[in-house]
Length: 307
Ligand code: NAD
Image (cartoon, rainbow, N blue to C red):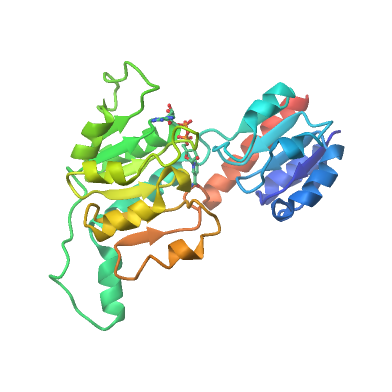
């Protein structure tokens, strides 16, 4: 039996399974208290986190017994993976386990925004009846540009093809994929910017991808696309995004992730009811179903690892 520390919420039935085999300390709010985490982590062989627990060098240096970091999700930007490697600590993401949830979010957001539904809703709330004030378009035959063609980018592309979209993807780390069964073309970034009606971002947050979508990119857009970001907030320059919307370079945006979470008030104050947008608090990957899958996956990986 080993000691496992869990610092964010997870599915109850997986928790019960883990408790039946190992000694578990479950404190779903501990991510808020890094000082306490730093103090107690020295007792534990395993830790399970989501994206709010910062597992940096400072924490790991105190974690003398730590062998396993389970991540209830996929982005690893809150974990110092290089230092974990150096310390021979295994880092396990729940690869693919929430991809369907994110993919559904992206297609839902794309459909909602291309039909200007948030603008119609705001008008109706004011008692107006604006049948011809805004365009409502079909998503079918529109061009989707997917940036980052990994697990989620592919799931999004498959769903998009099912609703009749043309899909283009940009991912310089993937080669020879132009013959794929999905009929999805890998293109150069400037072509994706030129052709897309909707752009969906599925990049990890790295030094290279920070600020990836900025004012220079917005100037390259030709079809006033909708921007959907479910990856990490800092991949987009948020002020440049608002400016691009105000300058009519884009026609809407869906943000599930933000440079600062919870959201920075200076940024949220710039977003008005008159904007065609969707804002959600980092939930695109968190559905009842994915929470079960993600938690089961990490618990099973942890149990196997220590067996
Ligand atoms: P993945 O690792 O399978 O795919 C990422 C892809 O991005 C890879 O194919 C990689 O080659 C590509 N890439 C890396 N750097 C690039 C660059 N500079 N230019 C273009 N492509 C580049 O990851 P995934 O499972 O598809 O997840 C993508 C990201 O989505 C995660 O890193 C995470 O941050 C985020 N995410 C968010 C939620 C949420 O709830 N909002 C849920 C799951 C994942």
